[in-house]
Image 1: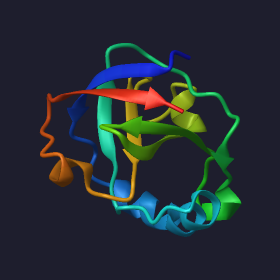
Image 2: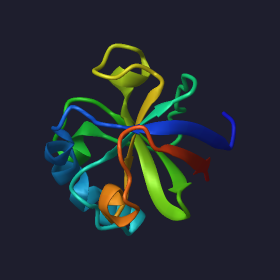
Image 3: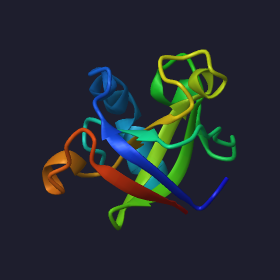
Length: 124
């Protein structure tokens, strides 16, 4: 996987806060981050498949699928790309060119991001 991804901010399905609430405690313990209860969706200029080096198990967050985790920086801010294994295998709600990023802040408000704004994501 390349170390930089390019894409555009995109509205999501509107249900990320439910899943982020479930993963909140795991992120606080495993990654020392208190998550903002939402995600920033990015439509990439190409498809990517995440590796499964880092993952959150269903037993850790009360879900149904493993969640793959990849640390990144967006606009210089630390975050994490999250994707269920289901989505990673093309069986989920998002195609492989859509990623969801969690951080400890509301990225849209902090950086005045709107749908269509271009961003670069640095993979860590």
